[in-house]
Length: 375
Image (cartoon, rainbow, N blue to C red; front, side, top):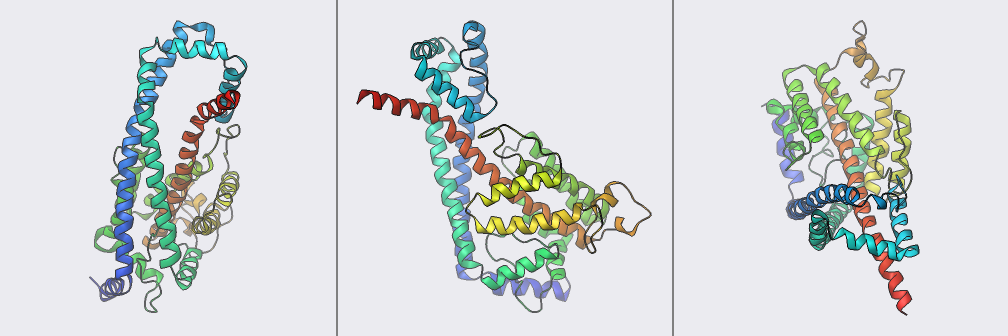
């Protein structure tokens, strides 16, 4: 361990492990664990519900093909809900007949039986999610000083993104600490720091197929950086970055309006801009503005001085110095991915909750209609 690295860790312990910050971390961990436990219960019921609904619906229309065209086809979730409500309101006898015949399908009966459990699990997950999100917002407002935020923004302009932080865990305000020292700390001891900050992604419970593939690429990228194969690491990162950029841009598609395809980077950025601006989260907004600005430089047709040039590396311009990458540039790009991932996950969580809430809308609307007619 060099004197510089030792000094960094000493300052980190002295300046960033205050009782206030440690207490905040402890509470965040508690709320995060509670949220993930509630999420696990909800996911279990959701998976059962989807499986039963898909198989039950297939059997229903096979048994009762006359109902195939009762509810008009629609590719927007809000439109589907409106169609269901219209049929129930305008053709109540037909709607009642559908409900009655559903009971003859075993899978749909089982789906209806677990509905209360799914609803309860969803409600408890949303409450836990809200509690955790509120805690993060509160801590970021109270623990990150204005000076600390300015320094983070300054580092972001250099391509060093620290917006993934949930408490001010790095001594970036110390006059002896530079951006190079922060990256050296991440690279120290065979990239142990990088493995730690990516641990929540690398050791997720029950990851999906796409996430398993991403985990493989993240592990491979850190290993390539550790072994000094920086250009190969960066190639991996371009695929990871592109995936999160698309994931963020595709949120809310097909829910309130017809699904659109965003094939170009600037189209996706504009869509994400609109989503971020519609949410009340100054931290996420500030992080996205910096991420988008720097990522556009990476993707630029004309190389930007001091910024990795994607085209030169992807297209193998071996005669150009732009293809050369060092440990610091590769690590910066890895941190850019981590921060963009946080943005994409934030939007996806919001979308998922909205989508599930909308699924309860028909029953709520019909219940209110019935109450109104009773009066």
